[in-house]
Length: 353
Image 1: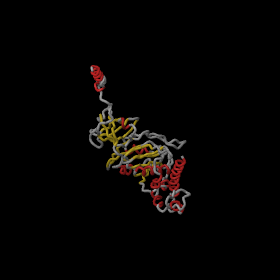
Image 2: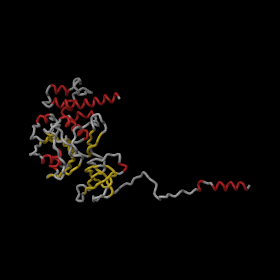
Image 3: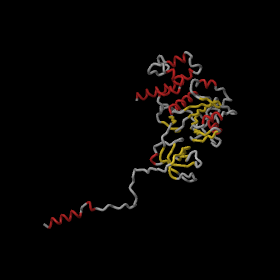
Image 4: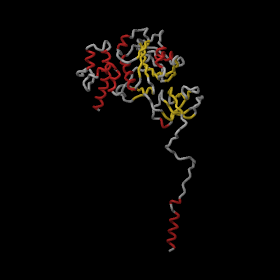
């Protein structure tokens, strides 16, 4: 029976369990998807974004406060990090020249101010995070004020849960009374400013304890106002083209600046000037809420009322026709209907596609 023994020897010779694992030539550990907990991460405020680099403020409001340059961790590459974010940072947090920290996470946001390219584009662009106020800056003249652009700002602020404020500059060039009549009935604090009489104390008092994003059309004096409130800001200022009546873009990025006033501190977030403000991301049902006085009257409208010119028994249309909303009523209604009709057209296109 020697042939049986020979077969057993052959089986032992080719037994796979006896094969030794090939050693790792690089002697490195296998790749893993697990990430470190980063228990030593610190919370920092994002105060500026520039081509993939983030200026963050570490130990905010403490004696050791310092500005640090950071990059984002690979796992955050699909997450938008914007000015105003509260970021978790690790690495070299000394702020020394040539050092680079790393953002490994973003804290939950309290608000997001967004806009789209136009009203038909539902792709949103985040402007700023964690702001609780919006200061809308318009000029009484040069360039002419645009009521409907301001209405769009107000809708975006309401959608973000942000309190709006309004500053009218260049009142030495034109009387803003007719323009301001458009916003009668709104819970909106208004400041007027002339070149030689800027109400910096009043505006500054409204900034204390808040994170306020400044928005406005190019050329309205927004950067001039920011420089007056924050002397160290050094934001570039421009002029208005005498042919087109348009302002030149001067602020090219969104930055967060500390306001230090006689009664306390706050944050000023300066944004680039824009000539349009798309609301493609906004729920159309919430648009009327930005028109406070019209929203109250709308409670008497029939169920499902569109508030458009052809809407039967619309309480708002009737109130404006009867003059119950004063001289600014027709303009307010026209602005509301233009916004609502834009979204109605978008819904029609979506239903047909």
